[in-house]
Length: 137
Image 1: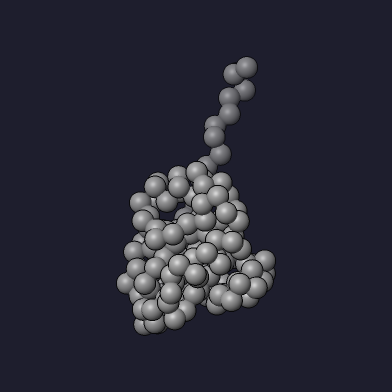
Image 2: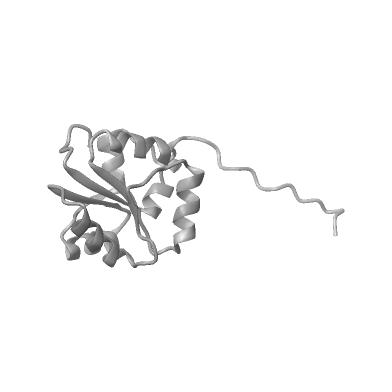
């Protein structure tokens, strides 16, 4: 995705950000070649806020208490850029983008184009199961 139009609004579905190994780095990278970047989700506002704070992500917009469709429509009306691109994780996200006139990019394609690493593609071992004790009630 590097080298694209700087006159772009980029929206990530929260699930797509959570599927990246380093969402902070991804947001920082995206800021270099987009005008505006933010997060869209059906999750309650506090879920998005907690995730972005934990990852030190400063977003230009977020869903707030609205649904994803209303959020994308609202963002498009407030952020007048040449392109509006939605990064998502499946057919439901693709359909939503098409319905509201946004370009859709699958997370895997975006990650490949921009050299982002997916969380499950890092090669790291999954966290070990918590130890259980048979002598514990």
